[in-house]
Image (cartoon, rainbow, N blue to C red; front, side):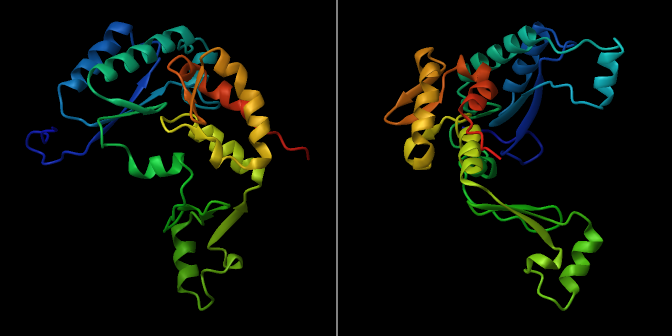
Length: 241
């Protein structure tokens, strides 16, 4: 189905795109996508432009040297992106990711579904379902610890730091990542402690058809995808300190 890119020999490629930039007109955005569709690229990641604090773009926007991101402009380009990729056979399997059947990103899909992963090397992150840990970032320090006589697996070796996730944090992270995917959130994967809370708070979004449900699986409708962060935040369980 997918031809190799001429002269390169690669057939598993992904492109990262940014939409919503004030300098990118709707016509230019459409032309950019049409250019991409001319090639056998099986995976696309597309992110809305955001102005991060203390960046050059943030400075330019505050000084009036660059236009701020317009929500309607960005939403229109996201809508076109969903329609154009669907017409070309792409599956919108996560809010920011589109793939031809069978070409989902393996690592990210595992991350979104809360599966354990192991990170090896400086700065690498690991997750086992209940704890998250991250290795020391400094290369020289990382190698020194490995070469020391003391076992590097001990937490007090300085090789890594570890965070134990509370039940509420695990629930919130599952909602945040799961709801953004075509797999959605399933009731059997939600800690029984939070099921009643989840069911009560998700009902208004189901009523407005922002969230779809089938056999205890919940996922965002196309309209709901425009409000993904807001919907997820309304389903978070806030722990009392």
